[in-house]
Length: 386
Image (cartoon, rainbow, N blue to C red; front, top):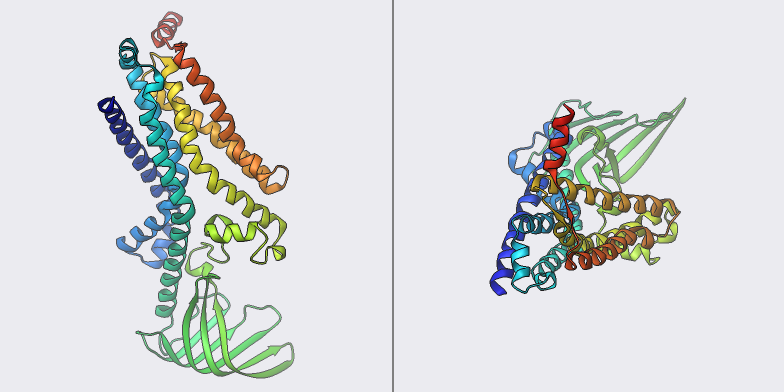
């Protein structure tokens, strides 16, 4: 039995690794096409692009781990069923219940990994991704402001600095003309300036010290003195439309989500729709890891019930079943965010339904009730029709 479980586990692991790698490759290629303008605008090298993709991996792994788990178990037991290995084991006195330890342990390990991605990996990746983009934008802004040159790269802003220290970004004798407001134009003069980043709010600003602001509004001119003043640089032009302003619920850490959902962290001041999104995100972070166990145990009896099915068709069936699950999950997310349905019900209903069905199908598979797919019959009918 140890040898049998070990061999099943090895096959599960190999198919899981291959499936997860394939899905990750396709998604990362899609992201590369999506961020091509950002990468070209920031002139990023292969190392910087690799870091950004690494930071995005936990977000994708959270969703891809359940489907890879389901696919691994389905294809493994489908092959064993097609090669009559399960029939041979049954003839030796082994039931399907005795084959459960390997897939259960495998599903538990995948669930544990997905819990790590959900609670820790996603927030780590999101924070580092935002910080990396902010640092790229800050460097880009620093390079854009050349000494002795009027810079007009940012809409509504004109920058001029007599001297710029390329090492620390310090600027001397700074002139800024701000016409981003329709009703007022401001001219700012300061002896010292520096480009700073605010990663928490997704902002880059030019910090000025000990200067004056000349505000012109219609026919009135006012002069203000300041000790510290920040001019915000619009990131839409630098990051090619990528939004790094306020954190969205799916980008928040688990601790922050829990605080908001429990009424802390000024939850009362939040928009009700945003608060519902936070509650939905909390349930999603919990439901997706459990889906590894539910979908994995759902795939095993399905693979044992269908006979005479080739692996390529099995792949289509498994993807279709996951599409049904993901459609139900997406519907629960939509209803939860709109307030029509409780997030607990909407996010956990797919897991509950698939878990009940998996128990019924397992009993059916143990009783050797199966659906034999005779593809040759359909091919013969097709030839006769032609």
